[in-house]
Length: 508
Image (cartoon, one colour):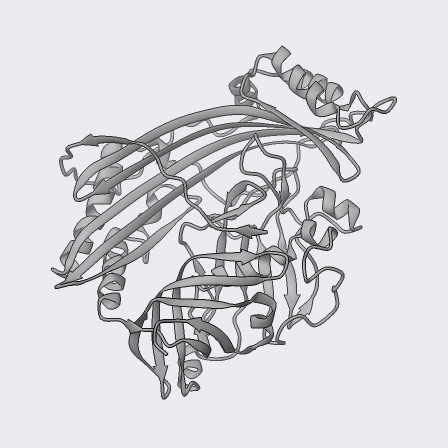
C-alpha cells in the first residue's frame, strides 16, 4: 500500500490589499461554547430523535451503532507576490451513521439533516447484517472528555484584515532577510469543527475543535541559480499562536528565507550507504511514516504489518522509545476525545526497543482483546473511524546533539524533510530532504541538495546508535493520509544517529 501526505488548497479571486496594523489583536470568538443545547439546535435534533435513529441502525441485528454529527467552517487566504491571489470559505454539515457487528461495519452518511433522510441513512447502515432482533440502547450518559485547546479566539472569527496583516508581516520579513529572495508565497488556512456523538452503548459528547496553519514558500535567485525554502507552523489554536516565541511572523519569514539561501549554495549529495544523523522535530516524519503506521492496530489485526504478533519482542535499538500521545495541549494531533467517545492517552508503543502495544480503535481493541487507546479518528462525517496516530514521537536520550555530530567522521545531517512514499506493510520508504548538510570530521560543512533517503523503517530503528536529549515537536502542517482519509497529526524526534541509510544523491 503506497501513500503520500497531501495538503488541499483552494480556489481563487484577486484583490488589492492595504496594510492594516494590529493583526495580533485577539479575535474574540462569537461561538457559543459548545453546550449540548446549542449543538442540538445546530443540528436540529433532540436526544430522543437520536435514539430513534440508533434503533433504526440496529434494526437488522447489529451489535451496536453510533451517530456522528459534524459542522465545519473552513477558510484559506494566499498572499503571492504581495497580492492576495486566493481566497476560499466553506461550510459543511452532515451526519455519519455506523452499524457494527464483529469486525464488519455498515456506514452511511448524509448532508441532508431532514429527519426522514437521516432515518433512510440509518436504514442503509443497518443492512450490514440481517439477523433477528437488535441490540438494546443503553441509558444515556455524558461522556467525559479532556480540555486541551481553547475556543476563545477562533481564527475563523477573525476579521480578514487581521489575517492579511499576518501574511504581509511574514512576507516582508522574508524579503528583508536578503535581496536574493525574489518570491514569497504565504498561505493561512483555518477551520472550526463542532461535533456531536451518540452511540447505543450510552456514550454522548460534543466538542469544538479549532485549527490554524500558516505555510510559507520562498525563492532565492543568484544568477542562474534558483532554490526554494519552506516553513510552516500552526496547531489547535487561534491567531494568538503567532504571538508566541518561535512562531512570530518575523521568525517564520526569516526561516523560509534562510533555507532558500542555504540551498542556493548547496552542492550535490553523496550517493550510496551513508551514516546519517536525523535532525530534531521534522525528521519525525520518517518515524511517523515508516514505523508509526505499522503500529496501528488494524494492520496488525490483519497481519499486514511487520510488527504483527510481536508484542514483547525487540524490534528496535534499546535507545528507542516511541510514544503516541493525543493529550499534548494545542498540537495538531491532540483531541479532547476520539471519534468513538474514547479518551486519548499517552500510549507507549516501543519501550527501550521492545514492542509494547498498538494504537487501537474500538473494533481493533475488541478483536485483539485490548483496551481502546483513543486513536479512533476520522476525516469527517463521511468516513468511519479507524486507528490513526495523533502526536507520535521518540523520547529524548542521553546525548548532547553536539556530541552526536562530533562523533561522526563522515556522513549526512538530514534536517528538514519534504514528501515521500512508504510501503506501510513492509516499512520501505523513500523521502526527500530539503535541508541537509555534509558532516566532516565532526562538523557540519557544506549544505547539500537533491538528497533522498531510501530504506526500511524497522531496520533504521535497529540501526540507531545515539539519541539526543533535544526532543522537539514539529509544528509543521502535517496531514496524514490512510484508507482514503486525511487527518491532522504532529510528529517529533530528538537528534538521532543512524549507522547506515542509503542516500540517493547526484555525486558519486
